[in-house]
Length: 246
Image 1 (tube, rainbow, N blue to C red):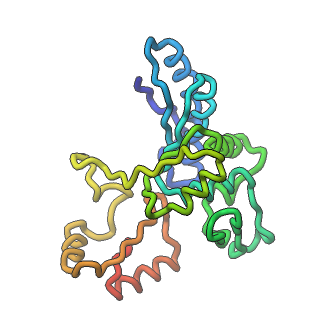
Image 2: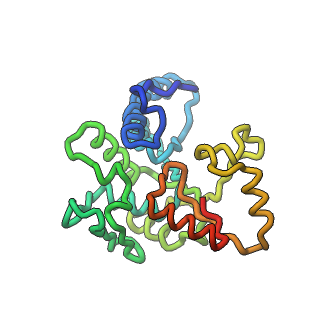
Image 3: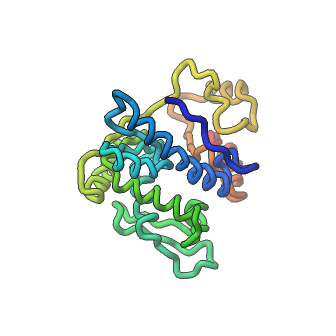
């Protein structure tokens, strides 16, 4: 079964902005009824649903169909742990006007603490009672109720957080299956993902090849992250010290 993505309003055809990601997540819920109809009319329908963490509404679909639903997290177990606590509990900061106010997660191993400005935009600007925001939150909370979780990570890296999720969710159906990489015949090519590079790819690869083994530090921010001026400054300093920072 192949369904076309629901139409979204103009200028929201990507997830690099707050309106874009809200529009996508909310409008994909329109596929609930067509998928439900397909399941009910298929002579041999699937026996489980595996869906992205942005598609939390598929938990309700799976419950309606009496099927297990597994959440796929493209990121790791720490991110899922933070997301679960954020969207279930909606923690607040003492001074909303101060972007450097810290928010803590004492229930997560190592008690991570972040300044408010480092939290995701969609969480910082969450509006209780707003239809789209509440749909988004419902989906994220639904992820915590799904039958199982699958991560693009590996146990040796995140064992403490994987074990935490098992305790927090009350079951052991948590699997790390990564790292998952694009297929070798990916026509887009790894150099084209995440937007265009500020440096020609061949020059970048030549620079990397010129460095001895174990001498370059890679830091991945994800394709949706836009660096602040301060991070750009750190990047420039890093390049001066032969650090490979995107």
